[in-house]
Length: 369
Ligand code: OSB
Ligand code: MG
Image (cartoon, rainbow, N blue to C red; front, side, top):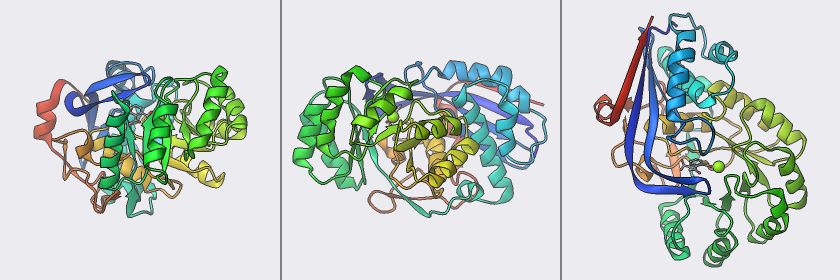
């Protein structure tokens, strides 16, 4: 397989509602869509970096810069026998995982299409359907949050995750538990606390949470281990894990009992698959996180969730969660309440609507060999 041409587009899509976390508020989806052409097939990859460097250091603009200056030129015109080789070729360039993943997932899609396989099958996935949870952002009032959660439960979501931060934690969790005592519930702090908040964090144990996601610093593993030793609630790491190596170390020191897998944060599908295999071997459950993706990213997430190590519901909601008009056809939908089927068509398994892509495009760069 030869990479003959790469098109990098920057898209802006209005979201149906804003999404607020401890690190900020996102009102518009600003992202890159990468298309690769091999002469025999085309593949698409979505970049999970956003406008501002708040979740991680990457942004849409830095990812575009890295791709056009370094990552695409390193692969253009090269013969690639298998997408696993992409990680190796991009290894000399440090970090910038989301930029790397956008290109690598596009190459995986093109590869799967050339093989006539779904991306899920090409990766070795063995699930036909996956269970879906939802991540609920910070709201203006507790009542509003409870109403939102009630609506999502009616739609069939299998697990509710709420965003927390100091001042939006104990009180809302108490209210949720009072109204919905039995639901699978978890909280994601996006690094809003420090180890000195230990006494406060221990109080979260009373809510029977399935896990607490990334309570401490985005670049920490050691303090999470100290916290986990004092906490009954399992810790799930998100921001701190950028590779299989990171996961190995975090598990070894007891920093987490669960890992949130994001293909972008890990630099691609090859790494995500390897991390999943490690965790399955170590009996550490993993699940697929989300980055408010549009359709291409959502389909990539579904494919990776079909791998055997993904045993918990992911943040892989249908397209309609954020977008009235997705860039894929058909959009991602529930087949049963809280259940999405893994597409069986070649590659990501849906058509990319070039007309809509065009409509949302604000910048375009084309590189060819
Ligand atoms: O921490 O998992 C996170 C969204 C943007 C950045 C970080 C996170 C999230 C979510 C939303 O929790 C998941 C989704 O619905 O895509
Ligand atoms: Mg998270």
